[in-house]
Image 1 (cartoon, one colour):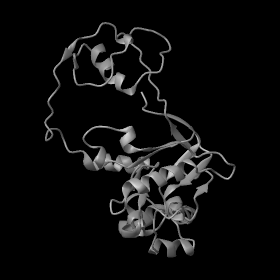
Image 2 (tube, helix red, strand yellow):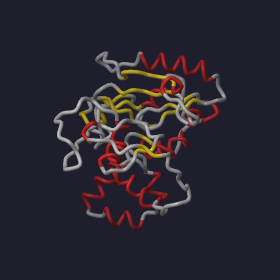
Image 3 (cartoon, one colour):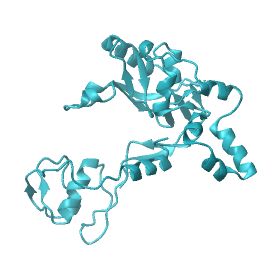
Image 4 (cartoon, one colour):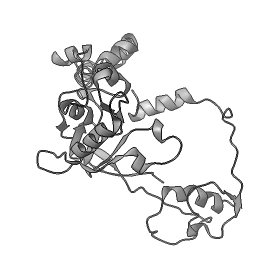
Length: 268
């Protein structure tokens, strides 16, 4: 299974640059700006290092802290971008792919109303809307942890990738690193003696997959599980009480997970 599909992009939208250009975010000058001005970015440094065959040497001899100071052409990203923002004067800041967080020092409802309206009307140079929808998080999510999440949720239009880079100077560009983007409909394929062949299924929910696998393996499904057992699993295996989890159990694979996420491009 995949929790999303994939499709080509035609536009990269730098949301924090847009927030700055529209008065929601205030930037300050950092060392990255100086390096970018003289043409030193990670992309140019990597190109030169490859030409001279010294990529491995630089990785070994240049301290990690120094490596991280060299900006990408798209600007600083993720946690580093906070160093470039005047937080006391900033009303909103966005993370990768578009979740927007509002500064509680300002009137959140007023800022949210204005921001949703402005984003909904944002188009590219050809007049195409960049977003299929812009929502208050409270209209999308529920539960006890909503207040810990983003305040504004953006649905990217097909072919649009939202980049959280800050300092590159552009609001929209052609695709750079992300030549493809997630699409909302994922993929599910099941085969083998534990499943009944039904050919193509109608659209299902991702929450149906876990109880389906449990039932196919003869395991009773906990009653607090979201989703339903799909018919391909045959007769259901019944239900059981919710499983109690020990939060301290299991091995700590934090470093391994972090390294893998860096390799995939989700962390720096």
